[in-house]
Length: 253
Image (cartoon, rainbow, N blue to C red):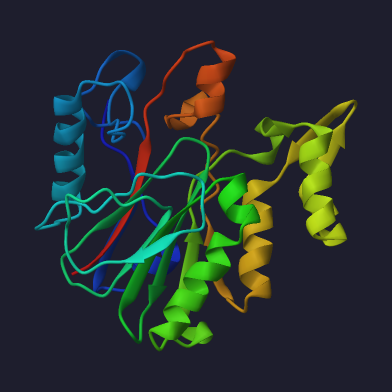
């Protein structure tokens, strides 16, 4: 399958960064990991995963290895200035270092890329419902502010994730969010006796409340097989016990 790289219209305007949201196309893995599986934590052949990461590096002209995290649905963020073999447990990365690519792995959760064009700071976060609920996006914004960013200079892009129509949840999940704020009701939809959650809408609203106006949503549903993304929920529905990971990446040139 041909390589597919999705670009943000807002981030594409800035000529001093490279970025991209990659789906499952264009790699070397096979079977349920076909083909651009970038998940070191998956049960795929590790040599194939490393080859896939190298393919991604070349595609965005990264001169160094991609900095990744051992993700755990938290709101933990690291500021990094070099590649490290040390295991970074968390769900967000930020850097000012030129040529250092930072990446996030997802399979239905939302990847969010940040860029301050004045201070030349980039950020990437993994926001599943747990991280979003813990306001990881707000934490990244606070992180940028501590580095001198003005809110008006920050662009945020919510990448491909599961759509509301495919994100069925239980009532206790809904109650948790309503307890956080009654206004969260707008992010839930009931169809007959089923409840569905709008993850990207919830994240978008959080970012807006935090003061960011430059926000873009990439409207690609990872659950829908025709879009060629890895999807944890789709794999679960098919009773497949593992799945590949999509990578989203950003780098200052």
